[in-house]
Image (cartoon, rainbow, N blue to C red):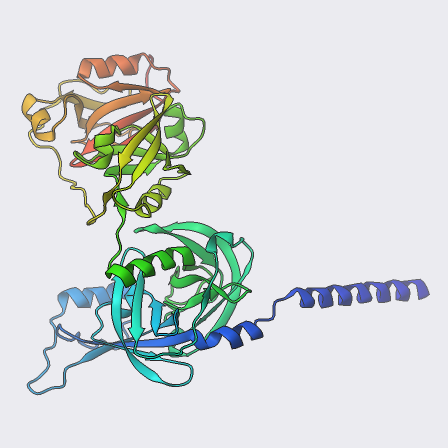
Length: 474
């Protein structure tokens, strides 16, 4: 009995010492908030509603239902002499210089007729937009004041996954709210966000936190809180911040020129999957696969070809396709850069002059015109192809290829009627397709478990499709 009591006392003491030790390891954010909190501001904007007001629908909160009303229910026009309605939004920002320059998100101030900045000392000041960049969601605004507290910037590249970080902002309008968490991941790619390697955190971020700073434990700004992933509209543990180095580069250009210059080389790319890497004879999935080169672009002039895999740009490795737009975009237009590409089983180095990105290009999805009826039976891919006429080739500016006229239900090929097949890749060997007979002969010579890749033209867009395994015997 006495032995049991002694053991119990021992384990209790050990548990208490462990808890105390863990408590000592937890960070104390109080000093950081006291020193840096004064540089965080609340931003409210006012925008005159320039369209007819939506009817009020009591109890309707579902977004799809609201979209129905937005599209199909007539607008209510304000009566004569009625006050002009206004929409208001709330966000956050932080002072970066004592003379009143403030960073925030573009979506916080975009379209605003009036921007009001509220400081922690309760002063409210009007702000003007110096410049805003949609692609990175960063805006630089300014208030007419001096002697303001300003933040210090840290190096986001030195952040480590698992490191403590802290956010200050105005979620749902609650000013100077402090939340903390850890860095969950770095270099995250988000849909439609090609130029920002986001910092992912589990810091509680909600509507109104947008544009606020993300601090490390040294009290340095390492990011701008910008987005959350949510199915409810509120925090669900996935928050994303724009790294400080991206923000500093953008704000510098906005301050100097009012706009941001980005490099471009004129290629359409896609991710290199494991099957694609096998087809192209690459040791592992990496790089950015070029599926189209814009005519007359810097890449075209440098000799970049469709089916090239870009492995590095100007000495910076390209591990995934999402890396290339960031690296190229951060390169100053007019500068010289080297490309390392994987072409037909070997590395090549090309040199080009970087162009300037002007606007987003959207590929057309129209089908080629004038398709002929099928002229062959289903081949080992389970598809039927036919020859292209000289007129079709001229219209599409191609010299070869075959057009898909039918796809069997059991086909493994991710193609559709109207697609034009341009190239077949197998074990790093690239063969341009010239005729139905040649295509069938190539397929007949492959083993049943072969992994092949087809270069597919669909409308104005070109992509690569990988197929594992063929039907029938070679």
